[in-house]
Image (spheres, rainbow, N blue to C red):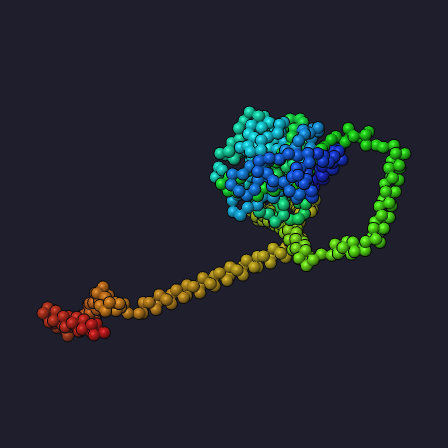
Length: 500
């Protein structure tokens, strides 16, 4: 099973390697934006247009601010001229409350949507794909924040009451609010296969992606528009987008001929590049000679401040702790797998030994040769594994002994407590100064029983003497005398009890 898993992983990696080699990637700057200088001086974003409550700055686009009932969106000005693409979006959703609203959406549609629409700030009944980062739980199923992909052909309304769960193509439950680092999402659409990878923003490793969803047979309209929208409701979060990087994906065979350059032209371009580099180096040296103070400032940039060093060390230690936890989790899985294998082997041997005891020794083969012993091959127990099992058993036995001693000690103490309570007098003085009548009645009953037992003992002693001396069989004690004696004794006991 392990060998089969390793072969499967190797085949998948080989297939991914071949896929990466067969795909030609080209960065599309007209469908992207990133800092610095994201917005121009007039507030516009090159090749993009935004509206609603969206605000563009040099570092990011705040699609929807943390105010109630805000909506905004940003869309590309021109449609795409490629069929397959990959989009990497870096964003941050942050707010003061434990719960936020409403969320952020990434769009690829046949037409540009509105800037104050009903679906995360954009139009409903869209024609294309919407990747929704939903942060508010409308259906009260405790399944938010949630990331989902929803397809629409322009005829359906979004199901807000159920958070779109009845219409989603696929999705995953991931938390993207209030993270120490910006969260990332990578959406790839190639040959009718949609893949969404997600970075949870807990580390500063930009390649720390995990699979969120994958769907095949996805048909999207051609020459569509990219967009990002966000909205707030009764609760509000800041929805900031820092990067939106678009890469077109093409079959490598289509660019095999166009990418090749003649050797003469390639050598010419190389020589021009080297000459330009030399010219830049000469100009840099001349500038440093004429401006020595600028050189000092450049040298200062190589050093970091105490705060920067402290932050860098914190981030590095956090990343290191994350890697160590992953290694520990992986090793723990390996240990659990080995323990399960060991237990399976032990149970197999125990069953084999029981069968031998029930059926007796196996019969020898013909010729007087004993039968070969059955081995376990590569799955046989090693010496250190046997020592580990024995050590675990000894620990278990010692724990059982400790529990047994504790139970015995507890039983002994309980018996002592019961005996001490039995020895104490039952009569108790009430807090109000009165006497416990119930206890007095019990003591009187006990006294009467003792008197009765004493009279019976005296009678037993007197009977043999009477039989030996030939005394008459009539009673020696009359009824009146007996009642008088009993009344006197009860009076004395009652007086003693009251005096006590």
